[in-house]
Amino acid sequence: MKKQLVAALIGVNMSAVAQAATPSMEEMWQLIQQQQSEIAALKSQLNKSNSRITETEVMTEATISAVEKLSLAPTSSATTFGGYGEMHYNNLERDDGAASKDELDFHRFVMFTGHQFSDSVRFFSELEVEHSVAGEGKKGEIELEQAFIEWDFAAHHRAKAGLFLLPIGILNETHEPETFYGTERNNVEKNIIPATWWEGGAAVSGELGSGFSYDAALHSGLYLAPGKYEPRDGRQKVSEAKADDMAFTGRLVYRGIPGLELATSLQYQSDVSQGTHVEAIDGTLFEAHIAWQQDNIQVRGLYARWDFDKAINNASFTLGADEQTGFYIEPSYRVNDQLGLFARYSQWDNLAGDSLNSETEEFNVGLNYWLHQNVVFKFDYQNQDAPGETGFDGFNLGMGYSF
Image: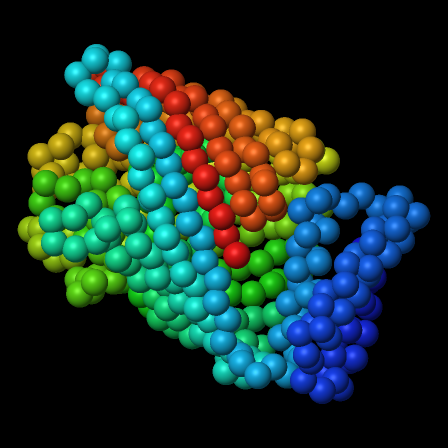
């Protein structure tokens, strides 16, 4: 019932907008007001039919309706701009008292640029400044995280080529600060997957029906130089990247039940040393996650595991690097439109292949306060246990936005 109502609304709007002349700013505002009325009507009809719909679904359908209206209406420019940013304050002390982290950092400033060439061909890019100042001897970097052409080659199926984020995990593709809890991105997706992770290549994606969608990509891969073994150190960021050995990533997602997302990803690369080691070191990444929302309650959980050829132990002189694993579970509760509370338990180990106690555990608890749905302030406390009492305990503060 819900999908039929949404389809009917979109169909009427598309027909009306397609026949319209170039809208003025006043007419654009009227379109937005009309869309809000249609959302209210949709909710009313769904309630009458005893359908259950989550806040996330309503927002998604509203966005789809608005985007389709505006993209079909002729405009003076097909180029769009956007962006996001976040600033962090970390007040942390190491368990052994040897070091502390007490710093303020404008972690990311990102600008999006997109262009619609036609109904089926578009461009998207993402340019980022990290740590505020970049240059020789500075702590920051300027990074091109996305720059690709996308083409709708068939109904419900798309292809893209260029530089893009890999379809792995929960945060790698969607990491605007208001979309997740915690000041910092979780350490499992950071150290095991490792987000944010982009590569250059080509990909296809689409919907398979019955709530299933897919992604498949052939792209540049990791390069783990001698002495390096953590996947995060192997990201080449498509900067004169070694391409002796490419990688493949595939993902299957299920969203057929309101409020639920189930997904699994697999990546394979036949030599993460890119031909620089005497033996090829193949690597396979498996990832699975769940994101479930019921009314004001949400639960996220993720598991990720790398299996490398045992030759990596010799190449890096680090025993145990052939297995690297991590998982986390994160329940949260949305008190109201502005306040949300969360807790997270996570564990990760980049040397899981040995028999030593090398995993790191972390517990986080905190809150997000949304001043606006796209403007958020964050607080969280962390307690971290790491080998050799090197874990950091303390609190983090953050602010973020997107537009």
